[in-house]
Image 1: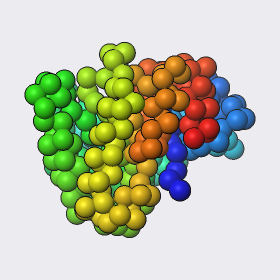
Image 2: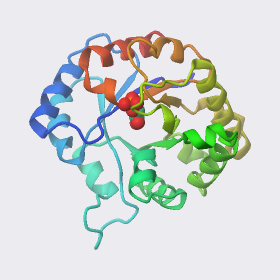
Image 3: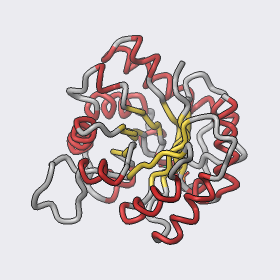
Length: 251
Ligand code: 13P
C-alpha cells in the first residue's frame, strides 16, 4: 500500500565526475523493485541526471530555499531544481539544523516552497542523544512534526516522505534497534493521523535513517511502520547500497 523508498543522501561527497560514475553504477542495477533516490550535492545534479537517464533511479537534492529568486547568496530555488530534473528534496536534515541554523520555521518554509513547485519532500526529524537520554524523544518528535508540517494539506502529504533520523545514530555506527526505530516511526504515523487523518497516515512513507547498512537494513525494514531508508555513508558504496535496495525491494 505504501511506497517503499530507499534514498541515498550523499551529503558533501563526490565531485561531478565521481558523481557521474557512482550514479551510473547504481543505475545499472537491474533488480530494483522499490523507489530508489540519490540525493547529490547541487553541482553534481546535472552529471547524476545524465548518468541515471532511462533507469529506475530518481534524482534528489539536499536542500531548497523558500523564495522563488532574489538576493539569497548561496541558496538554490525549487524552480532551479525542477528544471535540472530533480524530483525529491531533503529538508530539515539534522546537519542543517545543527550546523546551519535551520529551525522548524525555516524547514516548514522550505517544504512549502518545494511542494508548491511540484517537488517531493523528504522531511527529516529526530532527537539528539541528550534528548533521548532525558526521556523527551516523544515531545521533540511531536514538536518537529507539528511545526515542520504546519499549513500543509492532505493533498500536499501525497508528496511528503518523513525520515526519522535519530541524531545519535547518524554517522556513528550506532544504529537504532529495529524496536526503537519502529516505536518512533509508529509515533510519527499516529501524529500524522491526528493532523491529516488515518488515510493519509496509512499512505505516508516513513523512512528510518542513521547508520543503516547492508547488514541491518532487512531487519529495520521488517518493522511494520518502517517503509524505507535514508542512507548516508552506505549509499556511497555501490555494493552496500545495492544490498539495501534489495532489502527494500523484498519488503
Ligand atoms: P549515515 O547513514 O551515514 O549514518 O547517515 C544517515 C543520514 O544522515 C542520512 O540522511
